[in-house]
Length: 325
Figure 1 (cartoon, rainbow, N blue to C red):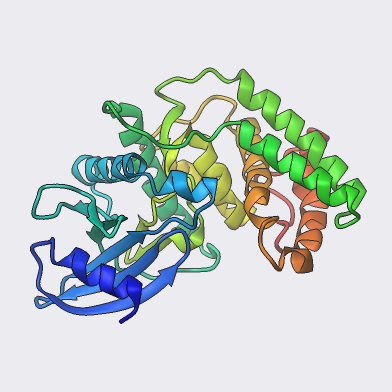
Figure 2: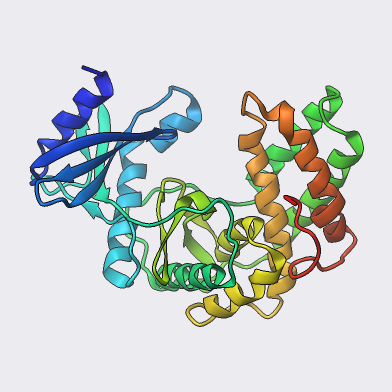
């Protein structure tokens, strides 16, 4: 029997469900199985398996995983959102340890995934969903012994360093990376000058991209909170806007603001956080084995459009051709 499947079966014996089927779904940061019980209820079983490097060892720490479960549990209690709420095992714990592997069991969230947000209604549903997440976070008291990552300007500095290395090696266009460096410095200055308050800083999903949102009827449902941590709420919106056409963004913000207020200068700030999201994710993209095949073209489009507008103080949030077209 496959080692991971063996771990999954042993983990399930610690929960009050009678398993009918176990289906492998994916392996990225975690190994994920879809579990169906005899009553046809569905669950997501995650095996938090470390790959051995520093990043993986942090994400697989029991304190870090437990903190994610604590927030998901609070979100399930405090909001009407459909999300992967966690289950406790027969010992009353959120984490089940099998052969030194932490395992968690969560509600399976049904819905349709979309590669991009293509309708104004979907943008509206995402705005409502994100507003509800941030409203809960802004009113939530962080419990003791709570450990999640912090999304601040240090991650952008890391990306800028990697981009410089690629450009110096002749793998990226120097003019593009120079523009990204200027934009990154502006973003870092912006983020470092912002005061952190309960209204603008708290727990965020930190990865609200289309693959982590499912749609069911008139509702957007967030999934995969594995990257959640502390950050400005506008980080979530800036990242989501990377996948939403400029013509739909105003509707998203209108729906969002019904649940959580936006700052007075939100357009200027959101353009900064849009750029921040793009720069931060370079940390991940630059590490992909095939990144050299597509990333230089992606960066060129980004640099000639949104990044160029940003460094020249030209607003781009609601206008123009997005970099992916």
